[in-house]
Image (cartoon, rainbow, N blue to C red; front, side):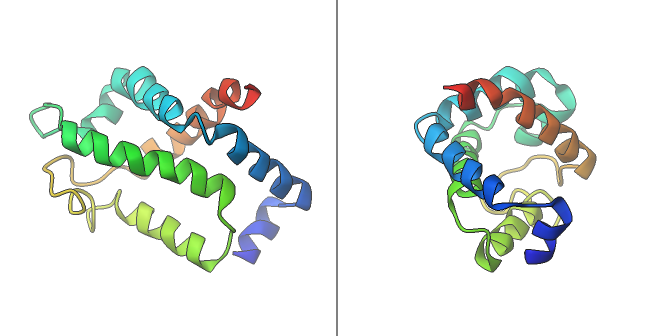
Length: 136
């Protein structure tokens, strides 16, 4: 984890702002996730398909459970210590987007994995669209 921090040039100031972001976002995680999922992902076919059945049908119980995990991920990203436990859980989240673990946690039938290119592209969207929530 320390090597990753060095690679990105992580500073004490970054740490201070990360925690401040968590305090600001704590009461807004549902709105943020609803915006990302309903306002953005839902309108992009190559993204929404990863939360639907192979036939394209919604999976409401999966949406609900994974939405809560997405909300918790926002808080964990901002408020948990960046240590080995945090890094290991990020690895678990990553595996849940691969053919090794996708669909297994919730017992659903959806796409077998989420391509890394979709995840990387969506990071830029998340960074841009979080700004109004942080401004609050």
